[in-house]
Figure (tube, rainbow, N blue to C red):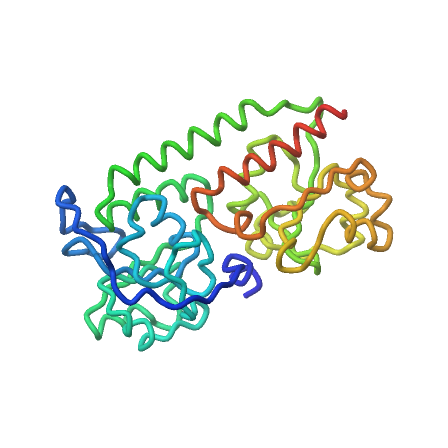
Length: 300
């Protein structure tokens, strides 16, 4: 549950957009089948219950087709924010927006079956486990919404940008170790997760991996003792907005002022949302990691 909450981090509540001004894409070819869902015609009233999907839809140019997004979809600002819950979806409330397609990250509570009774199809886009998964979802969302060319372009552009950032980042003489913090109770992400893989591209060694990076689904809860004993070179904080964490609060924890990362000023706050979503903004995450590695490499 904590992982799902972190993935859905962020909140906003604005009046819903009652009408879609989207115009059909006459070049789109329908029907199309994405996963196990066949979409007969281009959807013009989309409800997104996934912050990552919401960001991607707008990046694709499908924003005008989106009539409602869940309460955690706080980006981009122009998204039609509502109080719809992705954690506890209410089929009746969702149907109230008269969607012709609902996009969710999970089929929570039998959502797709409930909406099917009203004639609405649900496209489930599960959590990306790898960067390639994220790129594939860009393409799939493009196909599902009549923006296939844009989806393919977005996937390639994102892949290329991240590849360039990684290539341009200096390589330390020896691999740097890091601790990635999801919350103040020391939940972290191993190299078996989407975020872990994104950081691994920079040649970093994850202290959360231990002997089994797959433990706890890739999201283990570390102990303060383990973190202190590992003495990471870098600390990334993905709990800045939610929990007010920063270099100062980390240094104030018992014993943490002795850590190499703290002493060298290598504690890096991240935007919670960017650090938890598999949207095109993963490029921003890559830039933040590159900045951290470059600083540490030059200091070393």
